[in-house]
Image (cartoon, rainbow, N blue to C red; front, side, top):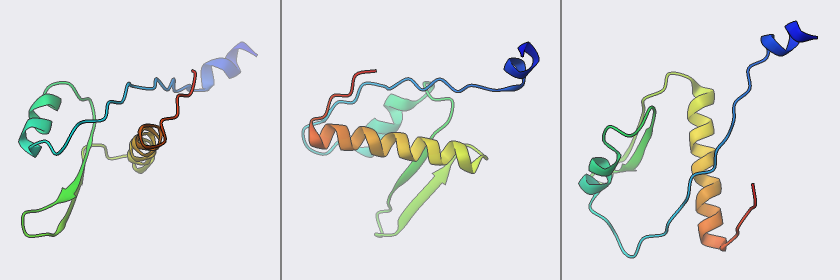
Length: 86
């Protein structure tokens, strides 16, 4: 049984704190705040020409989907005012 435990990888999900901001924030300030803090990330947004822009730093589709779904759940919590106990 001990060998089985060593063969499995466990991912611990830690829910970061989400804060709603008042109004829009300059995108350069958002990038500056994230600089040197992130191990991986996704950038999605609208270009100045109105085109959709999307970039990922992770090569793993599963990791990127996990980032997107975690962000979506956090946004839902903020929008709905839900507080889920860990």
